[in-house]
Length: 156
Length: 272
Length: 106
Image 1 (cartoon, rainbow over the protein chains, first blue to last red):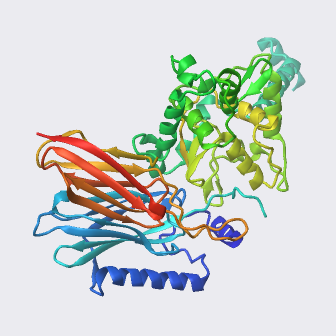
Image 2: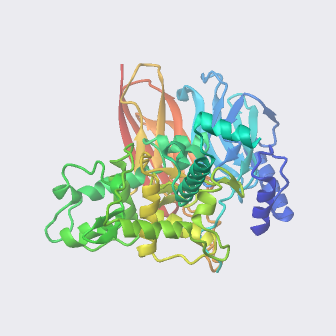
Image 3: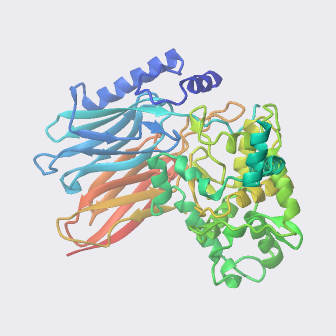
C-alpha cells in the first residue's frame, strides 16, 4: 500500500493512458488477467470479439475508485431482426472481472445503459455487446484510479 | 548636487523624511494585513468549494438529486423529521412546522454559552424537548436528519456570526487551524491555505471549506459528518484525533464555517 | 424495509423510447474486504434486477460485487401501452425489493 502511494506520488497523478506500470503483485495481476480472459471466453463461447459498435464512457481519471459512473451504448437499430441481446462490463484489475451484465431486446428501443462501478486499480474497463446475429463487439477504456491521500484507519 | 536637491524639495514641497515614514507605515500595514490573512482567511473572491476540484462526473453525482448517492440519507432524514418521538409523541415537524430554511447555514452557534454544531443541536432538541434518547455521533439517523435539515439551506450563503459570545471559540478554532501537530508536524493552514490546488499523492488539495456537510463521501461509500472528515485528516498527519463531540473539533468546525462565510451551502455534497 | 427509488416518466407517446433510472439502497459488501484483524467480511450484494412491463420482461441485469454501493441502473424501454412497470431486486441473504410505476401511453 505504501509503495503504491509513493509510486502515485512520483507520477504526480498524471493520466498515463494505461501505460502506467502495474502496482499489483505480478502474480496476482497474472491471476486476474487470466480470470478476465476466462470470463470473456465464457461470455463469447470462444467466438471472436471485434472492437467497434460499442461506446463505453468512463472518466479516464477517477476521483475515487469506489464509485465510478460509466455508461455503455451500442450502435444498433434494436429491431427483432437486429438488436443487442446483452451488454457485459468487465474490468482488468478487480478481484473478480464482472461488473454487470444487462440483458436487452427489441423492446429496449435503444441499447444504452448507465451505472456506477467499483474499479480497484488503474487498468482497463471493457464493455462487450452480444448481438442477435451471434456476433460480439467491444470497447475498451483505460482508467487511472487514484487512492485517497490519507487512509481513515490509523496504524493498527 | 546638494543645492539641486534642496531646490527640488523647495519647489515641490516634498519631504524625504515624511516619505520614508509613509513608506514604512505602508510596509507595516501590509505585513500586518498579510499576517491577518495568513491566519486562515482566503478572500471571498478567491474562495473555491471542493466541488470545483472534482471531476465532471463526480460533480454530476452531487447535482443529480433524483438518483445521486446522497438520496437515501435525505429520504431517511425526511422520515425522521416527521417521526413522533418521546413520551409527548412530538416530531421535529410538531415544533418546526415552518421548516429549517437558513438554519444550517448559521451553525455552529453559541446557545446559552455553549458552542453547538448542528448534530449536537439536534440531540439537544431530542433530549431536552422531545424527551427522547440522543442519537450517537455518526449514526445513520443523526446524519440523515442533519442532511435533511442542511438540504433546506442548500444554495444559501454560509453566515456565521462572530459576536462577543462566539469570539473565544472562534479564536480557539483559528489557533487549531494554524497549529502544527502530529508526527508530520503539519498545520491545517500549511495544506489548505498555502498549498490548495496542488496535489497530494494524486488527490487535489482543496481549500477545506465545509460547504456541504454531512457529505456523501465516495471513500466512505456513505454519509459522514465534518467531525469524521477532520478526524480522518488528523489521523493522516499522524496527530491525535479528538473524540466526537470534543470541544476542539466543534471549535475547528466553527472556524472553518466562519472562514467559508459567503460561500453557498451544498448539503448534501458528494466528495471523493 | 428495503429502500428503492424508480424514476420513470408517468406519461409517454406511443413508440417513444423512455429512460428509466433505478436506485437501490444497499451497501453491496463485496466479499473481498477484511476486518482490521484479517477476517474476510462475507459477500452481501444485490445480484439481480428485473423490470417487467405489463408482465413482460423488458430488462434484466445481473449485478456483481464490482457494482458501487447503492447501485444505480439506468436503461431504456419503448412505451408500447399504458400499464405498470414492475421492478424486482433480489440478492444475497434473501434480499428482495419491489417497486412499481404506472405509465400512461397516449
